Image (cartoon, rainbow, N blue to C red; front, side):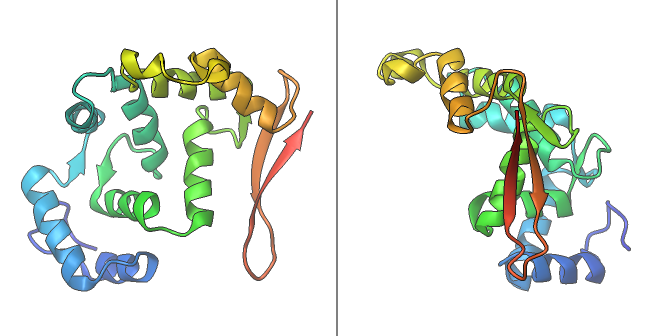
Length: 185
């Protein structure tokens, strides 16, 4: 399978990533080399991930959002991101199929990982996103979404849900494998 500290990516991981992403073997090898330089342990910790987000949002509080994004990318729940999780996340959020992006968005909002999204989880994610928006930009937002609470209410109302309702995600068995958000009141 390959050791996390190995200087070369295992053939199994390479083939899996070529099959599940749009990245070429050359691109994956370059990503792996850079990943190994930045993360000699072969893993990204939550603190390292938070620092990455802080560099992207230097004038904002990125900690809470980085924590949620990290949780959604850590698919094996081991508290770290390995190279495969990192590349799948990169692919999914940048060039991936719409269905995969929806699955990721659902996992981001499903804070407790129980398969359902509640209004309080939407509010928690909206709070963390709002911390990324500079104060002067918040003032320019439309009146119905210029606070995290208003934005969460607006998003929740899109699903026509009661405050104590929830949304669950399930895949259909159709040939196209469509993703459905099923609402319960």
